[in-house]
Amino acid sequence: MPVVPVPFPVRDHLEQMDTFGVVEAEADGTAIRLRFELDAPGVVGWQIYDPATGAFLFEGQWTETRGTKVNVRVALPGEDGPYRVQVAPVADRERFILIDARVGQGQVAMSPPRVASNASLRRERLLRAIPKALLYPPRSLWLNRKLIRSMVRRDILARYRGSFAGALWTFLNPLLLMATYFFVFGIVLKARFSGDPSRSGFVLYFLAGMLPWLAFAEAVGRSPSVMLEYRNFVKKLVFPLETLPVNLVISGAVTEAFALAIFVVGLLLARGAVPASMLWLPVLIVPQLLLTAGLCWFLAALGVFVRDFGQIMTFLLTLWFFLTPICYSEAAIPPGAVKILAVNPIFVLVRSYRAILLENRPPDFGPLFALWIASAAVAVCGYAWFHRLRKSFADVI
Image 1 (cartoon, rainbow, N blue to C red):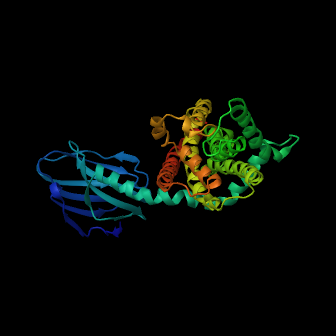
Image 2 (image 1 turned 90 degrees about the horizontal axis):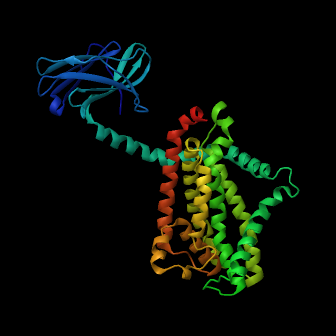
Image 3 (image 1 turned 180 degrees about the horizontal axis):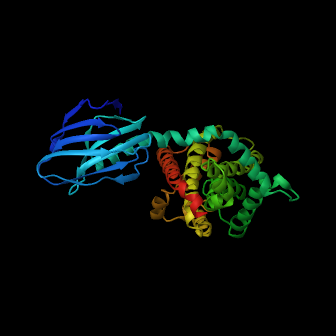
């Protein structure tokens, strides 16, 4: 909204204001003089807000009117800066006269007065927030890309510092985990997949399903405690805290990259070639990272206030794993349950990974499109949740 300077005592704001009648607004030093008409006599009050945050600053003295004409002087703070003024009858503040003003060098610059409501202001804030929600996360990550790269490298090396194998555990951990699940489900329980009932087929289908799960579970499982782990950054430094959950996401992606290398080697040994449909992999990686980042932002903020959530997430991830057909075939699920489990985003990813890596076909477009939309929404909402709560982190930690 353009801000028009109003030198005292010129009156140049004169508008017809619905139930408020004719409204005059003029500068009066560092105050605003308002004259308008009401439908009936009553008590009029005014309030000052911070236009950037919507925070309430203070309320002025109420004025009782004997007639319908109102003459009220709104005294703005002496400090330079922007202020939002709301003037309305005390009995009904759903609709009010709104003026955006700025105090500077002892003078007031203000926008034309307008009639607004709490509902209309909420709509305006929502419309302003949408482009910010879409632009701020990628902008912040791009500006801090060098820091993120350094933190991810530090995180991976620190986990295995002092161990005999060192960073080699980044390769060994997913290998040993997948070998354990293969022994239990493939050899002991003799589970098989309908796409390839052989033992080597079970290994390939199982590994293809584990690829998205490894990165997702590692990042989401650690996210509730990440702010506590880096509490010094929260309390003592001006630090882009939103990058800490993203570090987990990228660390998980590195683990998946090593697991993918293992899978490709196994695929070459078993089938002698890698299908061309593997070129669809970036189309799956992007929504996977968005979904993981959104959940990590959400859980990282929640974990500051609910310290037990780390233990709760361990159980929930275990449940999530066994509700997703990673180590068993979809044919083992009752038909009615498949429709319910199909809303599981990891289920969509597992199906899609197997399609492009083992069945030489593109992923199903419908579920993949829904996954893109849902993942983007989770990322935006997760970042907004984190951004809203981050100011309280230092007080709680």
